[in-house]
Length: 294
Image (cartoon, rainbow, N blue to C red):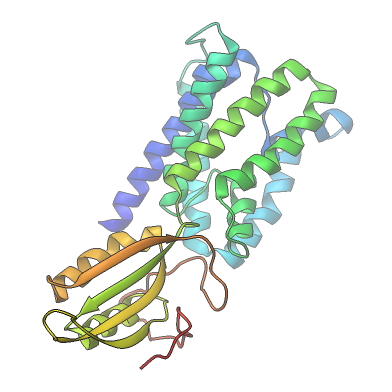
């Protein structure tokens, strides 16, 4: 059921992309960034068709994604690209508004919402989305900002070949897209987790078995009650919070939990996939917070 839910979400996100392209961006001939934009430029500068360039450029990107992000991600991405392409054949190309700037803004918002949903459910629209995701595995940089920077280079080059006015409309659209993507795709946001509980061993055991996260455990004592407690410290991603919160509550409903946003993480912190699959063995990890641990 979880896989079906993910595919339905990717399907919906892909339909949003198709609608944004055909109803807002294409009617005003707003330029394309990313790999598609590179293919268009190469198609004009060389005798090889842009469609062939699009395939040639995407093949190594998908191969790299297969090795670094996994088979499921690539298959989800192919599914997304297929749904978007087919939907664009059936959604008529027509202007919702004659104002190109308004189309750029709303087109950017809808593209960002669609792309954000697809990425959140472990897929992509191909091209620079994959390149951006690969880069975020190495650096904690917001994905939307990364994709915006990559697309901006292509759009800037397109301005020399096509139209600077269209290039500026495109820049506005992809900037808005990047902002919306970062509002939905929040894996880069890190949270400091502190749990004060009388069920320290049970909470620690469940967290270690469910996450690729180190935990620092210290002894504590309630200042008013004098009750002996365990204080667990760790750093998690925003995505993991939805899983961690009910897990702690199910073990100790009276646990005191403090969650704060973390500006930067240094040291051994696993990026990428963080939830373990059922039955997967535990992996050794260093403590997430440098202090005396037990």
